[in-house]
Image (cartoon, rainbow, N blue to C red; front, side):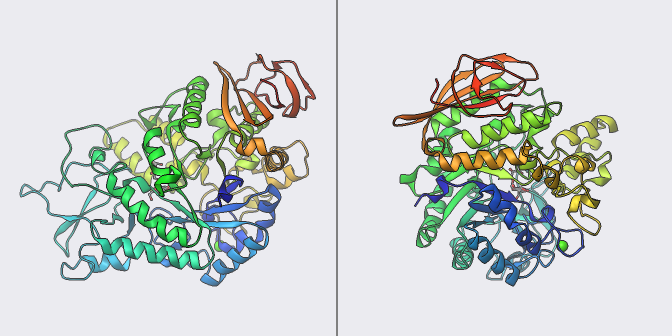
Length: 536
Ligand code: ISL
Ligand code: CA
């Protein structure tokens, strides 16, 4: 019960983790060959981004068969072997469950093009206006129209994401039954749970146009509605047969909505990925970046820590730029990488570490649009062109916010392609792999990697760091301090988010300090992070 509260979870983006056969694409045998790395980090579970059959319009988030493995990644035998090999190391596997939409290559969708087929109502189909207008005025997540005309059916289908990601229609009870079967299929194989993609938008209450004309027009018809809660409670029954856990990716969610999605007594999700703390460096949309304001970040984290009893804690994933250039400092790469590690592993909740975070990987070093792969970046670049935004500015916008920033291959060594592949990588390896790579950091007891290992071990051994309460102590312009307490035991965490020194009002015996200090008098170096036993 609640095993996921004591565990560190590691996210693998399979395409970019480890290639085993020289085709330039990461794969499941590659993951198996690196399980020892994860075991050393003290990982208790892996969240695997999608490995199902997919035409890869959105790198696996467009699934064409939920019961098959994408041949680029291996076979079902490889997958079974991964589950077994991971289990032998005490590591569980969490699958990515993408059920808001399927690929238009999915059998259901192909059948659905025929109005008389048994699958006719598996998706949202609608007629356009007589004047050639779309069925409604909603906008999609990837900056395009969210309706596409199908010449065979002579109707439009809804797609809130890419054109080839058609939204499933949960008004049809058969769709939910299909999903339950898929979940059972994987749970029977021994997976421990699911990360549920955009799970708070499943239920669309109507397809009416919206009077709101901001970005995401129409979202009041699908964001966190009661219909979604009902679906989640049904799915929970399947999960309970296997004691499985779920973490929901929930877009635009407020703390209150998050509570409704994961309060234990409501039997829906176990925790959610919320986004508010990822928005402290933007105006309204991620494409409009502003200077990162640590104070806003601390306040936001504090709010979420207080409002939810338990939640997923993350600073990186495959949709977000890397955390060091964003919340830390490239100038103090090592110090700020370690500080962010402390933050991620000492807040209350289940920490999720994204591949490469544990060695302080940075954003891509591409110089041209051509080097990018992500469908979202390409769409947005097209829109910027349409608005006659000059090339230089377009590139600046894309470079800072593109999802490809975190998708470059894992840097294992300083050798060719960072040891990721013997072939040509599907996405360019960052040239900084000469400086930032696992092999080098394994040999260095003072590296970010060594720090992550030590922190992870400390968290495992220290109950109060896992289960203790969260009490905010200080959230200033640059210093963030909080206390974790449980019975007689307590720890205080003090973090200096700045290239400048700081003074903090906290004292105590040092458990860990990224400047190697043994006593702490409140004076802090740039990006210093300290964990104190007791303290206040
Ligand atoms: O990165 C985003 C857009 O700027 C987010 O809005 C993202 O699209 C949203 O978090 C949903 O993400 C998930 O579903 C998408 C997929 O492309 C993402 O990779 C996935 O994490 C559609 O399946
Ligand atoms: Ca491969």
